[in-house]
Image (tube, rainbow, N blue to C red):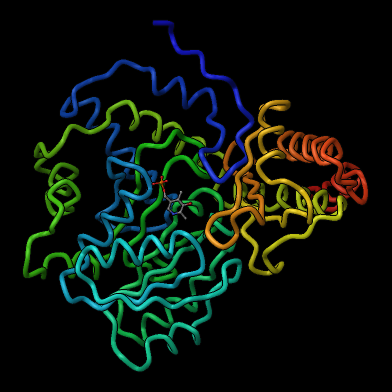
Length: 391
Ligand SMILES: *Cc1c(COP(=O)(O)O)cnc(C)c1O
């Protein structure tokens, strides 16, 4: 058997995003025991950095072992008992997944359906609730399947009217969009490492508010998943340091470095960087005559959905981008399958180099496949960068 030699790709899909060398290096440091004093120190630092990244003082804040979806399961299995009433905002794949997960926990789920590619309003949620109380309102902050950024303030207002805890999917927003758990009154949140934190996939940061902790403590039945039971895992992260499962030691090193880089850059500067580069990407796409799926004021900087022009073959274009340029972009999902491309500018991938590489590769590929772009994209990109130059 040969040693592995994975190709170096330009990752501009919906995740994973490019991983900085220092994060890859951190992963290769010596493995220590999961109760080694050195590792306990690493855990404490990761937790403190996560609190800063989430803007929260929540006690229950740490990464779960597993990917973003394990974070989703963690929030639902801990907060939902059979018969609980859960209202879910559904405007893409991840809202749909939350409905599925909540149902499997035995919840009575009411989906609030919104067109894919649009954000949800408080009025829509209250209409779907139909005057009834709910235990949980669950929404996706950054819907990676469509490229919509959900404003959380009206979601908190809706949760207040319903008497519900607010549960938020922040898998793609953490490290890319402003998120402030304490300001927005988010009760339970989960995220992932491979989107705007630019770490490989494998951990799922979560955080629970005091109210969510109380809900957990008041359960009548034990959490149905032993592995994801926060009351057990909290005692490994707390004073007791009680063994529950072996923490993925080296992944924790990687997350430590990814969070260190994120906070070193500064959360606000990092958000501004995502906005600046996505503005330039969009200028280039529009110069080529392509149309963006999401209305301007609901767009997610770290992921842009663009409509595939009539007569252009989705799979052929993406295959050629990968073959000729080593470039990965995402295809559409669900009702948008075959109709959109999803271009990610996440974490370390939100750079001018990535924007220019993507647009020139797409321009060449579309031309090669018989579609004539309206204009070449790079002068519009240069203009956009000139206009957005930091003062
Ligand atoms: C990627 C993603 C998930 C799922 O995370 P996995 O790491 O793939 O399990 C959930 N929600 C959103 C918004 C995502 O982008």
